[in-house]
Length: 473
Ligand code: AMP
Image (tube, rainbow, N blue to C red; front, side, top):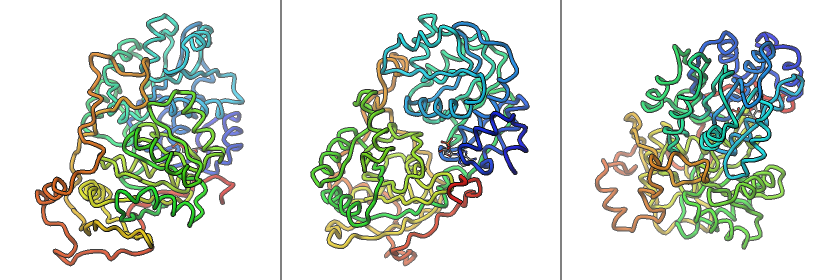
């Protein structure tokens, strides 16, 4: 299928062509006709699938014919959980609408509200917003929704994880009943379905990859390592393998700062991105990373969510995430839009439980490869695949990451910012106790193990790579 089969107008096709897109991605093939027809959508699609164009292109098409927007009004509202994602979606909207007389703007917290109020004065066809700042602007009469035609909830699962449910409910009450709703989420948990019931109307459900499948073109492997040696191993990998651009995940903001300093002491240009950084610092860090001025971006999960960094070659899990689905989100930063990527997890003995949960979720054992000179003294026990359905593990309560005064969920409803689990490793005794409560799982116990190999096995789900950019083919 080509984009011209999708009933899009010439100015859109021109913008798409200039991006070098050859074919619509699977989510675009499915979503575009449904949005054009005016139906509601519930789409299971992760970042990296081309979902932004999947909703933006048909929305722009629909906006071409329609009433002029009045002052302090908008015709389309796109809600995103984080400022970075909002800025990214807004950049996409600008790109695709460049040959159309359609206006758009983005608003989020952490920056001055006045310039945003000024931009809304004349009204705007498409408004991209984070929930907290949108409510602030509404309370100051800077935005009204009388002319609203389409609502998009992007990354709805992350909105819930971040405790935005009360804000979303408040926003829904402000919108006209008659509207089209497009809900995008990486996963469809019970809580997302419950939220969806209150928002979408007879939605068409679409999905482009099995829930929790990891992208086929991402090579995944793990490096068993002692906790203390992790930063040295990371520096060695970067130096020895000539990694040019690396996104590294840590579990805590403090851990991100510490690692950045350690990398810099090893002459590796690194910068951190997390919720304690000002908006300006985060925007700068991301820009420097994208432009290649900084080699390593160290991020916490929420800060990195949805970041669109083109064809990122390397993702490193410096700490394994507590919530297994975050592993899938993290490695979604690489191997994007048909490009190959590599995701490496540095795993110490204390992270065995997290590893088992991740392998159970992705349905694969992660191939192991120790780094010469850094073989761990505290052995990481061999795992065997737990083939029971993945456990429904509740996401960790938000740590207030990426929230500013105006981005935070309603104060009285906000969840605790205390993490339920310390970022410090469990002590040896504690870890042992944890392990003994689990069913027998060592490789030696059942002889059913994949031997560690240097070449990671290919993950189980294939995803299309036929929609890549023409520059790559
Ligand atoms: P998204 O999932 O919306 O974050 O998009 C991921 C990446 O895919 C972005 O860098 C887009 O520019 C790119 N992209 C979107 N649609 C296509 C397409 N049809 N062909 C190639 N790349 C695309």
